[in-house]
Length: 166
Ligand SMILES: NC(=O)c1ccc[n+]([C@@H]2O[C@H](COP(=O)([O-])OP(=O)(O)OC[C@H]3O[C@@H](n4cnc5c(N)ncnc54)[C@H](OP(=O)(O)O)[C@@H]3O)[C@@H](O)[C@H]2O)c1
Image (cartoon, rainbow, N blue to C red; front, top):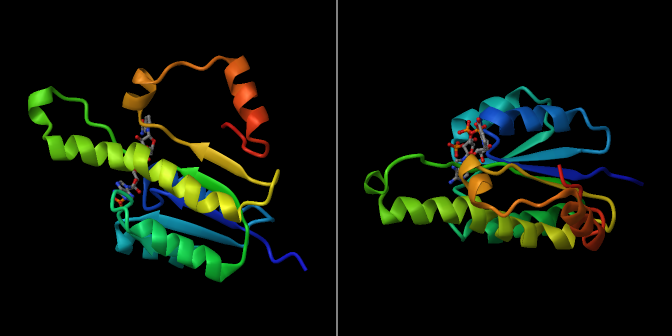
């Protein structure tokens, strides 16, 4: 029997992430949306509006220990991951003097490290050809990232069958 699948949304307590959760709740093939962010109160409010389909994970994704907990929960749930929405992130637009080394590294831990770590954590639980990964990049990363043309994207999609580049 098909028991459905999990959709994971980071940065789900507000902004785009909260909207992604609402969209994914409408997907017939999604039985649980795992909403990740730090603010437990906001996550609880989101869950209370979702008829039991949202599981909340109050955690700081710049803290590397959280990925072991997500892995533990994935193992326990036995449901495949159908959607991974890497949305949590932030960027500070300011002069170098207004940004500490700690803040800069924290930005990298969240915007880059957590995306890699969560991807690696989820991939073993994704059914081949049956999942989608969406990256919502902070504008600061987009500005600095090499621009991929359509051919690059098609190539990446071809190599990583099953990943939708949104
Ligand atoms: N809004 C824009 O115009 C815009 C433009 C370009 C790109 N983006 C990117 O789009 C994404 C979403 O933007 P948004 O405007 O919806 O942002 P937002 O309203 O600030 O929401 C960010 C979300 O990320 C979570 N978050 C922040 N730090 C976290 C951490 N260390 N661990 C776990 N969760 C964390 C926040 O929740 P907690 O505080 O509860 O943890 C919140 O749910 C971000 O990556 C942003 O950089 C936004």
